[in-house]
Length: 541
Image (cartoon, rainbow, N blue to C red; front, side, top):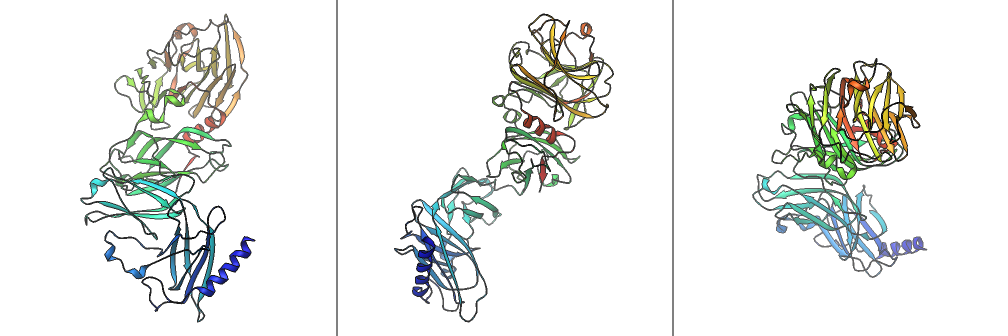
């Protein structure tokens, strides 16, 4: 019924659409005619709506007197939602239909060549709720007011004193924006390919940054290969000379910014930045990473020498998201290595030195005296009950695995990761006399990075090596002492090495983490696929 009605009305439009040009037009044009019937969302005709036709590259101006009226046309829909523009030149146009209350629609039209009989184009569609776009620009770069213009639309929005601007009555569509000023010294900024949706507000990427690039987060089978969604995840971004221009960024990376695909700023931490070596490791907290998806992306922006450094580790490794301790080993200062979380559980080091590692620098342990003591953690956020929910993980690179070595944990008799009898081991001590639950897996060759993850989930437990769960049942071992919660968290050496027969870890360690949540298989696999030597998650395009 709707199709028949549209056809009938369209024929009527073509019959009644005059050959005289509308406001400001001339008769020296191609014989091209565009007509349409528009509807409201309830199916009624969109009567009395404003209709503006502009060339696709049209821009409003600061001074309206400088615009030639031939560049634009305007009309309104009649009682049957009809409008018509005729005597148009060949070219590309934007046609905005706006009821000036709550809804609008945008046609992008490219007219082809015409013959002696002219060319007719008949359209029909339904108005949609307004889309809204917000943005921010550095006003210190201009001595005069700034304006945001929209290519193809009659829009000119003043940027306020805080650098903010908003366009709140746009039709849904894909736009290009231009920031201009009356100050001749100001270099105009163009932002392309921004999708403005009727469903949610869109935020523009930072407009004073000279360079940007999309970083795709590929979780399909060809990428990180995870099936489920992961939230509040710290994504590792490795920059080098092949994917980033260090010469066009600040010397310390302070101008780096990250946004999601809608332009919303993402928290980040610069773990290390070495301009001379053309190398940087940055963690970015991404709110949602979808499973089996190769199209999702974030943006990296750089090239603004006037901006301040927003790197903040505690925003990325947020305690609200479960992180209770994170040690990168890239920030040694004297005999101290720092915790990336707000807890500030900084470690006191004994003969642990920063060396080239998996993610920037790592900590090297000598197998004799090296250790890291996290003082004040015996009672508190890392003192988990026997059937609590928590996760402990570490990247390890062994020089020797011929005997038993302590990796990380809360003392020797509560919970820990270690090498025992030439096997990887996640040990959980119980309150029962002389009982310990151990999850184990065989160790392969030395001199290779592996991600060890131990997960306690109430009365269940899991040991992962890299992205594979190698043991989920464990074995009760009798004869060890009862659980002892009085020791601080330690890395590289336990609290009672002499009595246990374990040695200080011999090799390198990186990215030791402890969380008060049980990380799931998708999280653990995504961590491994993103952080291993050949990153399978992040793709620069």
